Image (cartoon, rainbow, N blue to C red; front, side, top):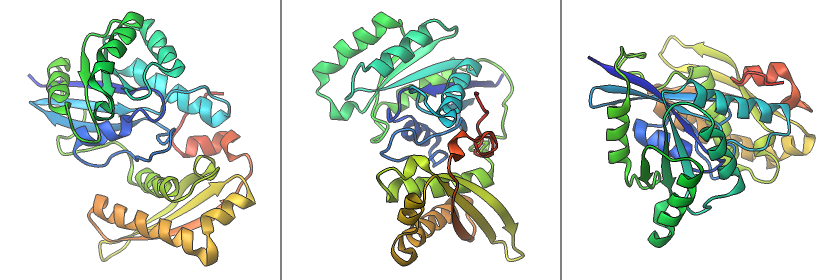
Length: 296
């Protein structure tokens, strides 16, 4: 009898959730950057392990929402937790028990279903600090399992993966065994471009930029043409993104194209366009276009 289940990966921004999902999946299914709030919607990664299909739901970091976009991101994160057979709370061991982590743990304590704890980035913390932190967190919510991991270095992930496989309920597989993610290629392309924006720009640009794949054209030679539009809120952000004589946008496009060619295993011709659109993060249509449901 096969086993299959959904595992929601939740936590505060920058806890290392996306890095963990990519490590467990063995490939890149979600974008990673050193900046918080990188993941904007729920991305499912499919992991086959010991005959079980573990569907990891990488959710946006849970934070105090201000804009309509923020509210949609937080709703996606909590929706991921409610839909899952098991919830894994990822905590940055270096940051410890912050107010944000406390609020998330308290909210999870009111829910149903098993919740596990993964203390991440343990390679950056003196070992004597880990047990008191685990005790503090368990006082808020008694976790069924606790794992000490470094997602970046791959430490502690074998045990986590074994335990996840054991915990999956009996049932048929929900995805083909060779499928890695349910993220459509158009959305994957937009996310890879956004990852490069996060990596290559600073100041206010990254979190005021949205990327949409406007066109996906299959060519006869097996290559694909991808046209993406980057929306920003202000003219200054557009200028930063384009860079001196277009140098920044060229660098973003080149890095994104290399990444996409590798992921799609085919030649990719990527074209980027930057548009200024004030208040896009309050527009219902834009929020739906990047894969989120409007939380009002």
